[in-house]
Length: 232
Image (cartoon, rainbow, N blue to C red; front, side, top):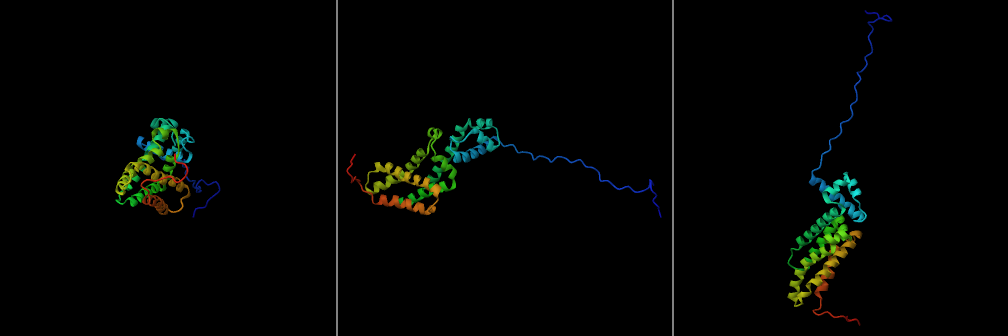
């Protein structure tokens, strides 16, 4: 039996855990975007801000900050705010035009009107930011194409349909462009209103639009006349 005496060097010492120096946490390596990926990111960021603030209310500084890049990166890809806006507008115009023209597949004129109405309302529902950008006026939109010019392109598609219908009914086919502009404009303006209110449901809006358009065409006079005092 071992007896421990005060000051005895054989007394067991309390063990002290070794001191381990704390290493700073490793930073996650940031994946560098390719030029194509960065460009697409800037387009999406710009699209969101342009829809919210409009062209005049958006700055390159805000776009760069939202994308987490410096201003020169935006200038490198697009030359400035105008270039980015033009790319966004062009992309939205092509998207809407493709949706409308791709939807016109039926043979019966009334169903074609339904398809055109649904296509525009589908675009408004699925690409609300894009539609808000298209309907805004800006110097860039006027020089690179505008919503009015897009509506005119869509009306050209409808014009061919109406032209055939006019010939079948014995009407002057030369007036088809006028009626095409009126019909497409009616749907487009109703779409702007529906974008904010979203009532009634999309199918009901389309039904009412077609009701007005089709029944108006169905009862159309071959030679319409004015009934008021003004004749010119």
